[in-house]
Image 1 (cartoon, each protein chain N blue to C red):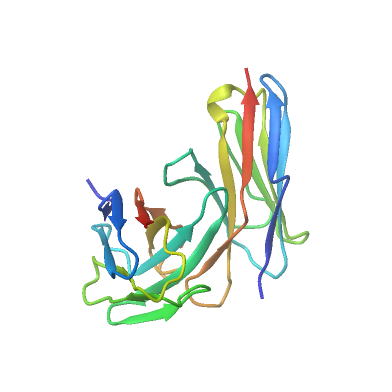
Image 2: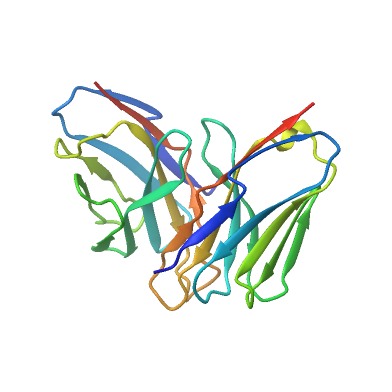
Length: 112
Length: 115
């Protein structure tokens, strides 16, 4: 059974600092997704990572995928308050139907 | 504009009543999904459908039912058998993995409160 673990689950950080959220998964997969959720809102797609070594960047967020280590990272550079949200990674159950498995989410709070 | 719509946004029901949540998409996606989210928690899969007239149970299907009579629509019924139905319900859709990326697109959600 595919398991997806995110850490940390909660993160409070100062504006201007850098930090990384980690997403580990337990079985082979070559597709990984990052989503953002604002309080009371739905999920918004941030990144789709489709192969080993894939790196995507949007503004202060950069995501990468290492399929050999079964690890994805979401790096935040010079955090700003607007990035406060919950971030989910989700992993494709390769060769098994159309399900993806979500991590529990990382609640990020950026202090002004 | 293409997208996923869910209605209603807020729903209040008395315990013991069945309630149906609507999900419609005009993205021409084959696959559709229902998730439940409790406060401060992640997403749990209730049901999913890869094709019209077919659907599979997810991790927490007990007390829920679905139908997929049209490609665009995937309604979820929360039955009186669901012990703790109060939650935020999210519908999503995706192209079938075999046709494309498989990234899921989410609707705005329905917040159900049962008292």
